[in-house]
Length: 396
Image (cartoon, rainbow, N blue to C red; front, side, top):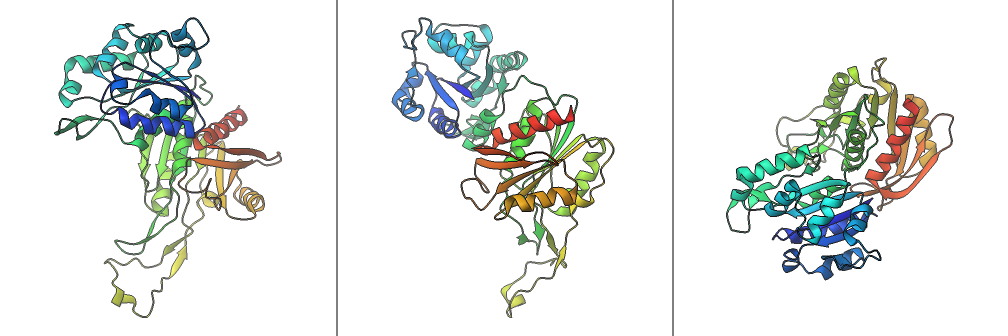
């Protein structure tokens, strides 16, 4: 993806440095435009170093083309305004193009995402809220600021969100294709937890990142999406239309699936499901003296959700995941056959570069009676895009 950051002047600008770095690392092509005021907070050299591209700030910027602002506007797949000041938001609403940055934004037909950050009183001002409403009506996506300590020393809404939230927002797919329009897709994500006592549990290392990427991409290409997720630090954009259901253990996961699959067309089981649970869960926190001769837990097998799931007639396509450390293709093929899957996505979780809790993945996609499709290491969002492209093609 080609991302053009338009950076306006505000104290939150230092947080955008991390967002730019993240997008470059994710393999996106990134260029930066700065307003003159923005250059007072962070030097252009910082962004030039991160992107290995010059920073553009006036009409004399050398792009090898006579009309620099149009060249940049045409280049971008996505324009990200961050941090967006109240002044720049007003310019976007009114179509004002009185400097290089505002002219580039006005000239661009690319997807626009705006991340405001400002004083709480400015944020709450009716004029600012009217402008934000108009931007949304114009098709601009807004990531609202959060409540927190502001530069002035007091708390309120106006603080630039955390790096994780910002990166997720910017990384959402930009797609004009509605290849899954009219379909309902259920995605599971994260790991389940089986309680030992009120404090301890049996769990796994799943972060939920792959499942969240699949849910976001499915929504981006037109699907109605339900995301059933185990405990995770991940969050959805506040404007997301994805229905989120939080679960803890396998029993809750199965109950949620039984309900949501009644009207679903596609199920993508990206969750890491616990194979066993504790036979007798303690109602109080276990103390060391409770197991002075060693802790022994009796485990009972959980039901195999994919193998035993009631599949309504409407459910046309089921995708499973095989997270393996060895015999990857053999184990994944066996899983696909035993559980009657339309697709299994196999990934090597023993590789720390593409395993749990990282942003990249490399997978092999297996389908009955078809050649394996290998997808080399890339961002989980791009992996999700490739998976859903195949799903949509086979649904047709």
